[in-house]
Length: 133
Image 1 (cartoon, rainbow, N blue to C red):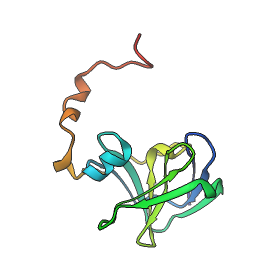
Image 2 (cartoon, one colour):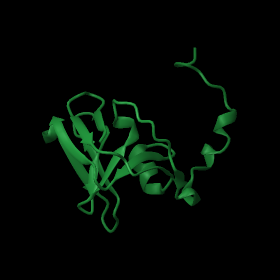
Image 3 (cartoon, helix red, strand yellow):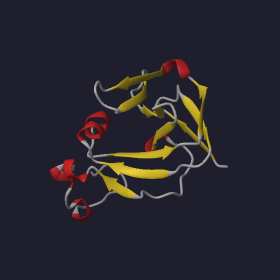
């Protein structure tokens, strides 16, 4: 069994996930674009892993988009995405909130029909280690 540790941007919320992730998807749906403010969300999914809040659980806020299964948990201090449970048994963990390295790579891009048009060809643009001068 694997332990994964994570936190929000401001450090108010910390958590541990005990268990392994079943899947890792990069989701391009419009809901994920809106709640990340980016082209996609990178989420890990687990049916048997257990989430334990180790600090700041009172700062965790959840929002479920009415009429959908789309749910987002976030820190009310800094707005960082945090793990959530859907349908009572599916744990969804935004990959970027993990502090421990994950070795699993995404299995698939999903909802690619909603992919942001500006996302095409990103591999061809310049890369910088930090903010360009």
